[in-house]
Length: 381
Image 1 (cartoon, rainbow, N blue to C red):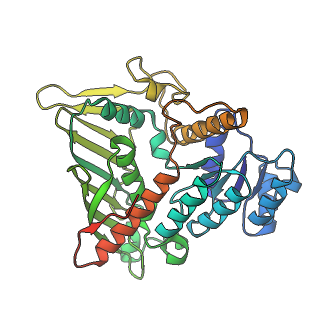
Image 2 (image 1 turned 180 degrees about the vertical axis):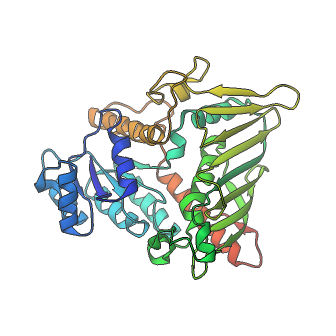
Image 3 (image 1 turned 120 degrees about the vertical axis):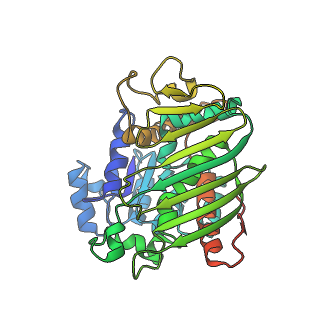
């Protein structure tokens, strides 16, 4: 594994390294860990990287790694949003597999272009929408696939956080990182782009439904900010289901309260990220059931493939879910190297199409919020 970004003091880089290392199948051997060459070298020392493979720029890294017999098998991209497209394009065209943090690119147009580049290559591309890695999210997906919920009528997905509420009155000490409030770096949305896309991605992953139209109201409650810190979206799905997607960074008292409820004609399900080892299934005329990770009754989709690492009653969480994306992507890469055909149904990790869908969601939400028309057709996914 090589890494671009994620050097000293970078939270998400540390998360990616821990997740990649969890199963002992991936070794970090190279990287450009900062746009500052000196900091990149120092970060390389922190991670025990050969000094010759701690590069001063990602372009240098792509060129020199491509020339090595022991070149990296893939590159993990954890830079700021505005660089995702350029870095991914550079490494894909240099012949490397890529794992990229979300959102996939800065704009929807970049996302569709990157998909074209990926599809015209032989490279594997994974996107770290990490909440799809939780076993009970995979169990929820399997239940919907099995028809256990019947016809889907309504979906509610929420991602409320409250960490930035102090900034509304000017006493929060700038808790939304400055780059996330800068359109040139973060893109056209802060809250929808950062966490709203996770709620949207959970819906797509669990139900397989695509949005047809969206009606959005995005707000920047924090004075002086161009980009939203709260948003409410009404959605109409293809096939007739309706839904609500809400995300917020000023929801006072909430921490990381991502949750989803899917309502069907036979039953409904409910999952909360802050209690991720449980999946609640509810019925109109029977007691609700609680499914718990690691038990014998859990499906192969959730318990197999190494996605569950500890026995029941031993909680698994955020890092393990992140690691499941790395684990599935690593298996795809190993099979590619060995010439082994992909399993029936493929590999269970988000890919370039999920990245395009995420940028389509951001684009449509921002356009709807700025429009008097309100209901906006969803871009092509």
